[in-house]
Length: 567
Image (tube, rainbow, N blue to C red; front, side, top):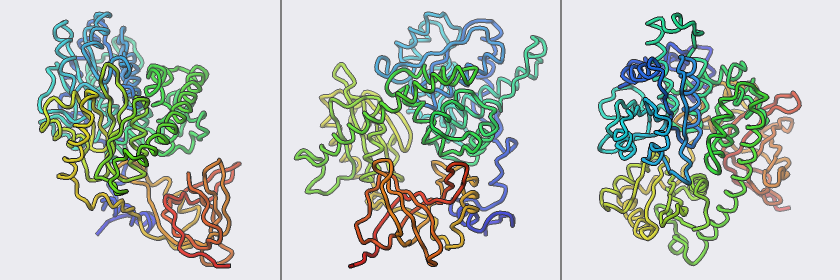
């Protein structure tokens, strides 16, 4: 039986139990509950390697990734090394359109121009065999910090820190890239503190916890599962953001998104800040996002935040056009649908699609059809770049590995997670890959996973649907991947409806007593047919703040008409 204190609301006890939490201690999100730094394989060796470079006064180059996890990892690395007295630290983020992903030989050559004593990868590197070999040829040691799943062989780096590498018994393989580098920098801090480094050099004593705002941002944005360790990292970061003790760039991005930093929750990070930061890497250069995070003042960060916002608007326009094109493909004579029946997975390509947006496109199609999806764009020089998104129960990276094993040479390179992965292949191999994708899915995919069942936390009583519970739910997380925000179901009377913002359905709902009413909104939902009086919803109970007034509101995820009047 679950064991919670009497202070935990009965609805919350039910919700936590459904997410595998059975003890009050599992709800404790304090820093002492974090998994010890020393448990992460290679972390002490990484700290020693970094210390040798700092002590020698030679340069360190950080090689990041072009998403929010990579940007926060890069910013945290620069901030930490500067705070530790590193006199020469710089960063490079491969432009996805020129260099592609990770530590390639070309990016190593670019880094080598500054004659670094050490190259440090963040949020990448575990599959960068050729890049590490190139660095070795040039006499530059490489420290890999990553969280992506490794292949059969590891690169020959000086040190590798990755909770998913063979032989690592770290209890959580769910750390994001920024979580991994946070552990590495904390280990380095512990070492420096133990030898009185800061005191001897008259340096202010840093507090690694001050970087948890970046850890929260990267962890939520990268959609890694929020196990207890990650929830601690995220919650502690959110607390610092709420107190205004965070990077000015995060405050600027929240302001641009019209989100109050005092009340920020994980969903604000995931839906408002993360996409704006990611837009730089998708359409331009993630250096813009990193510089926003590194800005030393709000005034300096705001112009960069505005640029990121404009890029995000452009990204949304491109995404909308690509989605329309995908819909045309799926309804054309060349549609992968067989007699209108969906296959096990969808593999789509259009030569005009934007390489930086295909991941979002794959997500949208996956959500619409509840099928694993890989969307491809032209990668130049006869190559295609693909981005895949999976459904619960199917491991996308493992699927690609099986295809690669059975079809040597078909996939040029691949990598990723259970829910998202990327790959590249020659354009002439697209049809062969598409067939291999469908054949492998037919073997591996449980057909029951394709039903798209929406799991909820059950029904709420009328008296439970109120502002008090909405606020408890909002504070009951952090919610996210692997620890989903509570979703309820129930039937309501449709009292009023109108379209707002061009495509969103605003409703007033009743239940039971005629005096009881509540507002609801369903995003990208057309109006219900005239005469609809009763609707059945899957919804989230949230807090709506408008002109200083806080009220309960339903965020509708799915809506069905259950009864129509005939008059």
